[in-house]
View (cartoon, rainbow, N blue to C red):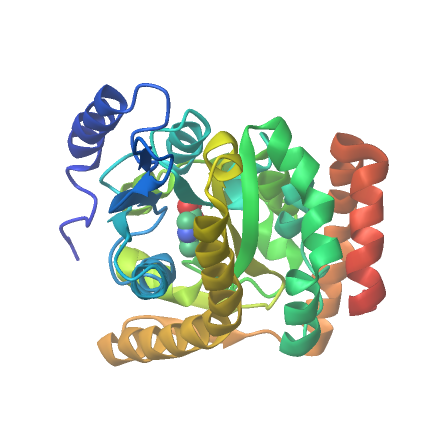
Amino acid sequence: MTKRHPLLSFSLVATAAVMLLTGCSDNGSSSAAQSTANGKPEYPVTWRFALEEIEGSVQHLYAQQFREQVEALSGGRIEVDVFPYGSLGTSAQLTELTRNGSVNLAFASPGHLADTVPETGLFNLHFLLPEEQEPARRLLEAPAFISAFEPAYHNAGLQLLGFVPEGWMTWTANNPLRTPSDFQGLRFRTMTSETAAEAFRSYGADPVQTPFAQVYSDLQLGNIDGQSNPVFAIEEMGFHEVQNVLTMARASRFIASVVANEDWFAGLPSQERKWLEETIAQLSEEAWTLQEDLNKERLETILEQGGIRVVRLTEDERAAFRDASLPARQRFIELTGEKGQALIQRATSIAGN
Ligand code: 6CS
């Protein structure tokens, strides 16, 4: 089946928008409140928030709630401009736009970010975070866990605001992926960082690291054989239309991070920082329900459309993948040293993995 890709005009629109943003943002302060003669900020001001996903996604729903909450808390003093994927650039480009202050806030997924912020490669490892939702949630919201990542984000000119769960990664291919041997030689698309690729290399796959916008056409043209993403993303990007089997292995959750430009964050008036932090804290709880509902709904849509089979791995099948996944942890430690080792310990002491 041929489908018009949701990001068909991605690069043209993105290039134009980036030029527009960078053109009107000289030193990253264009969206910060200007001070009046008495030193008080002059409102309203606009916060620019860039997404790695298209409209209707987890990140988009999150950003809409973020906008409503910030606008309500600030009594309209803060306005939020949301830029869905396709309007600015790839994940790597969004990180760069945040770093240079062209946007104030963005989603930054470890799958793409880990080459820049190596510690985030933790989230690319399989069978590591707690499997049950409650302990996973406690871990991701724990201030000590979040602050362990902060220096690494600062090194990249970013302020980490929080982690956002987006659902279990689901593998798609034209055959079921029941054992690591099913991955042997499979050209499997991963996100662009080394640890994202290593996770599938350890199963025997031949990882192909590409931006999100390229996945649909690569599947359609047969340049790749499979890929991994939460169900909501598979549905909205149309991947299920060019693949035959969804394999649910529950090997890893998609965890995104919300980041801000470091200088912008440091320069926020205390009242604005309070509105921002209050909003992030509230949404980090709501995101669990938001993603769960969306993933459930999108799975129904996929099944209603038909033409694709769902395979859920048994515990024995999962155990074989867990064993095969362990070399990727070593690679992560090679890349991050003691800090990475400490993060693994922290995650596994909760998870028991
Ligand atoms: O696979 C990707 O590249 C993307 N997947 C999701 C669900 N969000 C953003 C990321 O870039």
